[in-house]
Length: 518
Image (cartoon, rainbow, N blue to C red):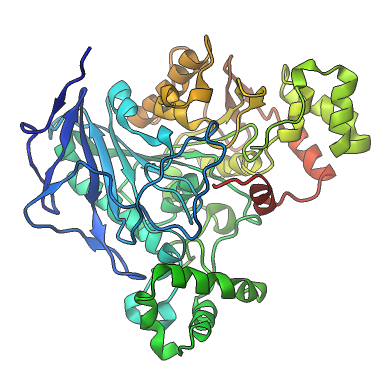
């Protein structure tokens, strides 16, 4: 059946920034590239304003990247690439109704890519149409400043640079403020906003819970594969005096010339920063690259403690089985004998192999023994820790999940980003998700639970078992797989044993060795 497209009769909306014109397609009103703010380099965003009617039918610029993207692993995580520009403060909206009285739940996506890369449309699975239509929600995705544009502190060099170490996060707060002030025009309820993100986007969810300026702009959060150990990804502390002085010296400038960094061509800015940063970092001084701890951003909760206000926000936290194990296996695990599997595992665990395999079988019954080689050492344990911290006091629901599905690609268990299509109801857009008899049911379970959470603060779905809240002593985890189940503290012994045997996990080395973009 031919789908319906309309443009001419779609009403012009009068937002706080100006008049806006989107389009209608197959049941949804869609607005792309809506400017929510404007900012000069290294400065705070100011509300957007425009004259006339703003066309919102094309995606806006995304933030420039410090390195050229290289397409890879596109079967596992298919991407979209888009024109870049520093003035990237824009958002996209999908909604069923342009009705101020509709009061539909609002769901805001914060993209992954750490604090240095990515965009609101980077992954094919980020498209908001299906979530809008299937969940009857208003979906928003945000672009904001990244890398040295979003997270380099120049405050020692002038008042106009105040909080520049948090410019990227300030953009997100500005976007949430725009959503709060305008989303009713798009049928959304400004008093029921859920923010969610994966990887770096999940970190941003936790960060926003630590920013008083964001209070009241969102009401629930979902962190997907976005909690890392505080020792692995520590918050940025200190000021940018040393790194900026080093950059200026490299350019043959003095501190009196700091303002020239505002107009330096971006590629030259990146080249200069990249050259001097390692030496400055070796001294232990601040080099940026992430949000700066100050009186505006109170720091990662695992490192600096969680605000009491954050504990009042219902929170879902989860990770996937393999996270950064992107590399394809060099063997067919389904064709191995028990002895062959033990021999492969012993190459990593040596004399501890039998103990490891016993603990793994207890934690993940039914999984192939060689899967223990891909067990996540980045996100699961810190996610458990953050969940317990959030649950302290019982002010709002805390819910844990573990996505452990095996995909039809060399029998590979869930990797970083592989759960995104299920949460967005976009498995039809990611080929590797097509598992007959499995995908459709699991997608409805995951998506349904998330939509329930966005509406009520409690994740539930008729085909799922009851999903209890985490408490200070209990950590029931919803295991998303071919058969979903809830288990409590099921992997404590395994994770402890793995960490007692293997050297500390090095995330950056792993990402570089497997050519992981984010």
